[in-house]
Image 1 (cartoon, rainbow, N blue to C red):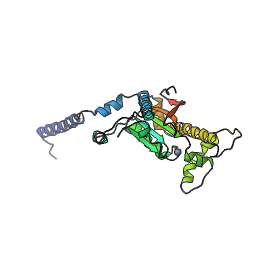
Image 2 (image 1 turned 180 degrees about the vertical axis):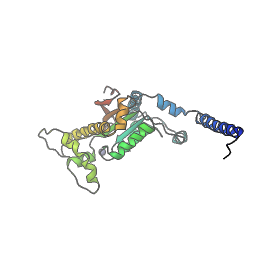
Image 3 (image 1 turned 90 degrees about the vertical axis):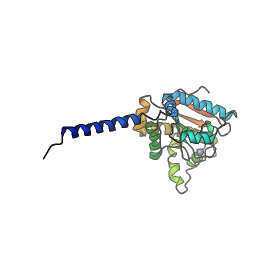
Image 4 (image 1 turned 60 degrees about the vertical axis):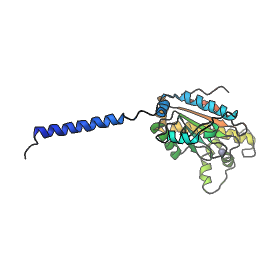
Length: 248
Ligand SMILES: [Zn+2]
């Protein structure tokens, strides 16, 4: 078989080199999004500080006046949120409102009783490992219906399985001789707090991907509680990883 002429070999090599060069040039071609650069430059602590400031604006009636149309247009090419949330389904606890965030600024996983499971951990892994968010916030809220349901061991359709995921938090609250049911509001609040701490712990234990990022200081993690009466989120210092909870 006749070997290809030296000229043909050269032409093919040049074509390949050109194609590679073109690909490299084009990859670097579109200017990096300012949103991407801002996300990359944000530390976990800065992300928490921004959330705390946003919650203060929320509780003081000083929320940002937003042009949602502009936010939709600006975020359409790509999303670069600084934080992710695990929050309750409760209609009064939307992280976007509570922390005064706009379109494309938060990944939010919501489920009645703000627990984590495989699907939520997978979603958090996407938010942080694939999409670059810097801080995970798990927060419960006062007078949570799901927590009350777990306290009373309510059985109802698919809710039974969901509430079973909160039961370990019920068991974690020490018996102080007072009733261990939803009529005891102090008990309900203790279970809600234990439930947040459990989720924070499980994020570390059950997600090697997130644990590695936490251990490397690439992301932060913190738990807290939202007060339905005041709109304020109180963060738990003992749950904080790579961030410092605000003095409150
Ligand atoms: Zn709730």
